[in-house]
Image (cartoon, rainbow, N blue to C red; front, top):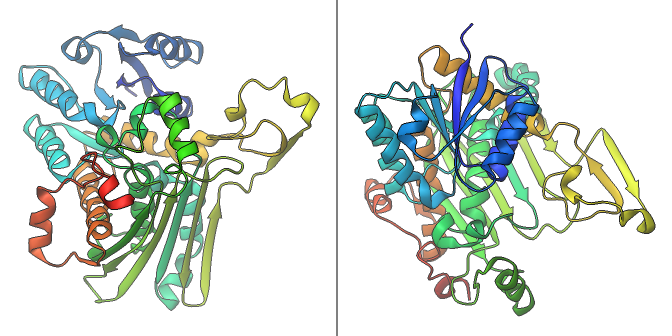
Amino acid sequence: MKSLKIGFIGSGFIANFIAKAMIQVRHCELSAIYARSRADQLADYARTNGLGDPVVTRSIPEMVKTCDAIAILSPNNTRLEIMQEISDAVNEGADLTGVICEKPLGRTVAESKQMVQLADTAGLKTAYFENMLFMNAINNALEQLQPQMETMGGLMIARSTEEHAGPHSSWFWDPRSQGGGAMSDMGCHSVAVCRHMLTPAGKDPLFLRPVSMQCDMSLLKWGQPKYRQQLLDRFGVNYKKSPAEDFATGIVAFENPETGQIVKGQFTDSWMFDKQGLRLSMDGLGPGYAMEVNTLISPSEIFIGDEAAASVADSEAALEKSTSTKGLLAVQPNEADLYGYATEMRDAVDAFLSGRDATLPWKYGLDITYLVQAAYLSAERGQTIDLKDPSIREYLDGYTSKIAQGKGAEVLF
């Protein structure tokens, strides 16, 4: 079977995580890496781990000559310009099958719409990388509960929480570059996971119709003077002048268009979780049954005492976003698989080799952008947003939140 040659635009944290996932996926190789910081290190990792012999390129027209698909894994504020170059190269004759975009598809609805239009114009197949919808821990539980859902009815409420101590990179802390704060960064995960858990088996990922969004956002830890100074010293980001939310929570309601049943997703996301590291917590409640996932419940754990902790160089060796090098530590032996990265890559590779869109095409990513931006609008207005109102969709088409504009002080302080 043919191997799908994939080029990476981006060589930072997420690119390295996806490269780890690719080791577990057949029929794909990393053929090119755009010449950004740490590109050479990622290329060495690929060669060492049998992912191919990628070339480090300095232009997109050069990259498309070596690839069947391109994965856009660069900072959020660079993606639209990159996609324009990819579309131009294909329209000028480059032979490219598909394009991948890591979540979010765009910082605003307008950006996401442009991404979809550029892919359509170029005739490219698309894959929106939302890894959590591919987590086996979630999907195996849903499959196990399928007889109960058929007999008793589907889940009535889904809850999803993602928390850690904060992003790795300076651009992620900057609301103008990133598109917001914890809601833009992680809320897109949580809203999508809730929708996925509530969607009946066998239905399209966009089957449920959004009904309403209510959201509250706050700046709790990183707005305090001590921690604002830490951000300024470490990342050069001024949260006194242009802050983003470090906490967001809300409820999104959906309607089953076949039955009229209303179901709800409750989400909470924060950059204040100073415990073991990244925690993903999901649960669902149905009539007479329930499910729960917690990624900090590990099959392995280790203990490191104070004296031995001095020899530990990397606190994240055991768990992503780990904040400690001593004490009782959770260990996840295969985070790339646990969080769904390997399965989402397998889905994209199989889809592109078959000449079709992935399970989550970019139109799905566009709809998630609508929901995330509706959350920002709800928080700004202090009211529930009616997503059935066509004028709201029209308003969101041109909406940029105050936080994403760098005016977060007006709504967070």
